[in-house]
Amino acid sequence: MSSRKRVFVSLIVFGIVFLIGIAGFKFFGGSQCSIIDSIYMTVITLSTVGYKEVIDISSNPAARIFTSIFIIMSLGTIAFVVTSVTHFIVEGELKNILGRKRMEKEISKLKNHYIVCGSDETAQTIIQELILTKKDFVIVEPSKEKIDKLSSSGGFFIHGDPAEDDILLSAGIERAKGILLSLPTDEANLFITITARSLNPRMRIVAKGIDVKSHKKFMKAGANSVISPAFIGGMRMVSEMIRPAVANFLDMMLRDREKVFRFEEVPIEEDSPLVGKTVGESRISERTGALLVAIRKSESGEHDFNPSDKTVIQEDDVIILIASPDKVKEVEKIAG
Image (cartoon, rainbow, N blue to C red; front, side, top):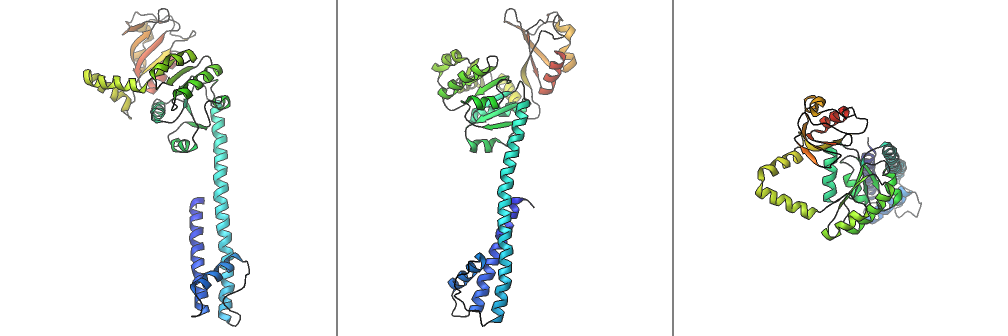
């Protein structure tokens, strides 16, 4: 029996015993005994305080037998209620402590993960996308109530102010690949941008900028990219109007929960076995099924769309493709 159910059962038993006491004292008290007198006798018997009896049972053997049995029932019932409630409280606290310790241990093992600050509608979309694309992430949220609501969605959670260095460090910011800021105000997101950049100069920072005028400040503070929900919404609306087929295609990619395909990127490191090979020699599409869309060249920073088989893959190039999360992992294995 679960601790919650046990508390519920114990309270029902207590209520039944209480009603038995009222009915019994009313019966043995006779017509001169009121309901209030019966409740009073039941309360002082259950609580064992020993106040003066308002119903005289000294000359009634049956009433004394009932009272003796009722006292034994009361002691057992109170013990049952107290242990059930105590077990529920202790077990709940213990689970919280152990769960928090276990989560902290798991977070300490993460590397190249993402940190999401905030839990508004924008953040919830971010979280769902990270889950669908099988990315490791940690959510940092100041509100305990919001953390409880999001705890069933997956990922790791830290309750605290993301503006504090200790909180970001506990989220593994020094080992993180990037941080996404989606707090309610530009001021909060801007302050965390400065803090995050000082703690990890190499990570990527993407911030939500509500006021377009503040975007330059974000970039100066260290953000790699600033996203305006209003701007993105407007672009989506006009795309639905002038290029509906394309918008529908992209919408299908983002919303399909069974067939998850995304535009993904795989960087080519210095020791990658693909360095110096041509696209034809690498056989990325044939070996993984991923669709190679473009290569961002390291030398010029330009994108080579639909690269030919003779295109040479070089160090620090970035391969851009359309693939499922599993196929992306296969490409990453090939790329070393």
